[in-house]
Amino acid sequence: QQPVQSPQAVILREGEDAVINCSSSKALYSVHWYRQKHGEAPVFLMILLKGGEQKGHEKISASFNEKKQQSSLYLTASQLSYSGTYFCGTLGGYGNKLVFGAGTILRVKS
Amino acid sequence: NAGVTQTPKFQVLKTGQSMTLQCAQDMNHNSMYWYRQDPGMGLRLIYYSASEGTTDKGEVPNGYNVSRLNKREFSLRLESAAPSQTSVYFCADRPAGINYGYTFGSGTRLTVV
View 1: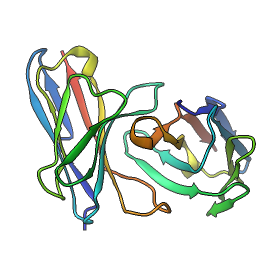
View 2: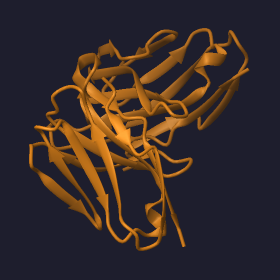
View 3: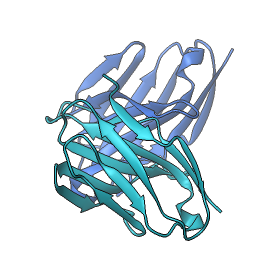
View 4: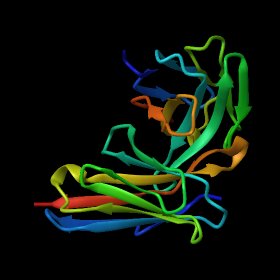
């Protein structure tokens, strides 16, 4: 039931773009995205509730494809501050609570 | 307005010892959660509480107990710590409504030797 994230890790240079994918074997009704910097707590970025929905947060945006049971996080013109581990979360599991993917490590180099 | 506060930040236990991790939120939210985070495994739900006085098991509840005596506090207890419980523990809360994400505390890094 854990959503699958890809890639597991990505290294970028400042200004480059990246896409992180989150897919599920079950129907998706909503997708959360979080970022966690090293040694810190995860921080909520955005939630997508409807198929076809797209949202943005600074130069970070996401889309939700209900039919394909997946969501993608887009990081545009990456900055050093974007480095961290990105997690998607989908409702399911025990008590229909948030189940997190294993995470994607993003490292932005200057 | 501190959000979600966890104590302690670090703890080392010997196998068999017990301890309680404390979590408090000041946003008057009903839903609170305990997750553990291990390398390469993301965050896994231990227990959650939908409201004061109610608790339910999550994915990995074995070896843990929780208590939600009031709306503000949700504690996690390890009765007899084992090395497999070495992990980083996060408490989180969430406002009512589907548009909101989780707010996490700063975490407790627990080592059981």
